[in-house]
Image (cartoon, rainbow, N blue to C red; front, side, top):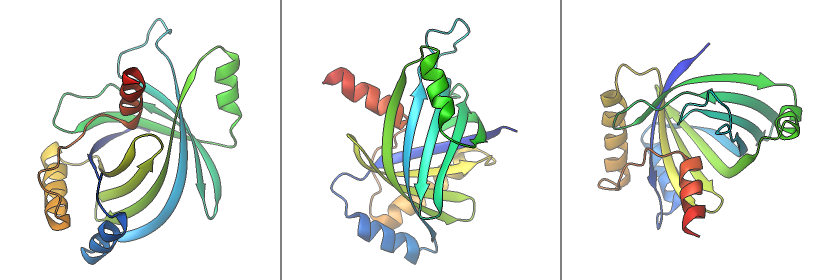
Length: 184
């Protein structure tokens, strides 16, 4: 079953992540733990029915309790001030599906990050250190009433963190990685 995920992120370049963690916990956010995520985005552009912006992601997550694998379809991004799109996620028993895609001739683009996860109510905050890109805070809500609900929460948290005025980023890490490799 699908859901609509709304998200936005800000760069934490030059910011002490330890201080951000302390402030989040002081604001009532619950720390859920740390995870290492390695995402492989299957390049679907050669498919005849590909719609620009759709994504098929294979994810391997490592936590202290073990390794999990998931396949996620992300629909076309809806025009708005936040990233809003349909998402369908399927748990996998192991990592063999990625190998199947490769054997079919699909290329995969890798994005890896260390992620600290915090939650308060419907809002999830991820403190991410992304290989090759740097540090970010990503804010996410699933099925909120509106984008304004997410933006109101994000602005309040950024104000409390002393980070108001930082530009909101709606691009995915995949898009940021692709853009950085095009420049290099």
